[in-house]
Image (cartoon, rainbow, N blue to C red; front, side, top):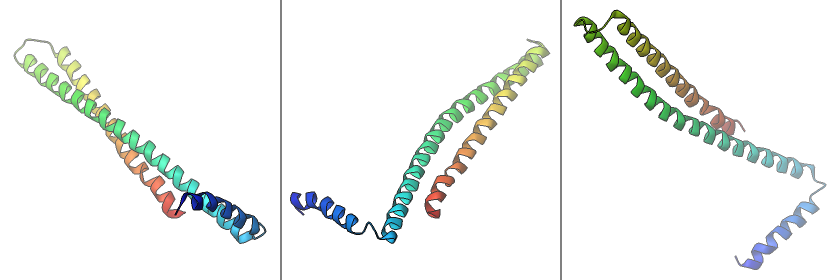
Length: 130
């Protein structure tokens, strides 16, 4: 197909659309195609948003898992120090509090990741419904 054919095609389409302007089924069909196209584009935008959220969740999950592991190590050290009498029970309680807080935050980040993973099915389902 040459350049002239590429330039003439919109003209022919315009003429065809103009000649069928009074035909209601053609307008309905065009409206449905436009609506389907918008639905698909919005679904792609939503999928991209969810994938960005999942990427952020993965980074956050990794960081929180590291923080939880560090708090667990600190707790173990505090337990040994209390056992050998090098520190008080108060430092052990503080280490336990830090560990449990880190654990709670880790579970919270995991639940966000699960929610975002489930949210990925919504935009994909919208395309199938259309």
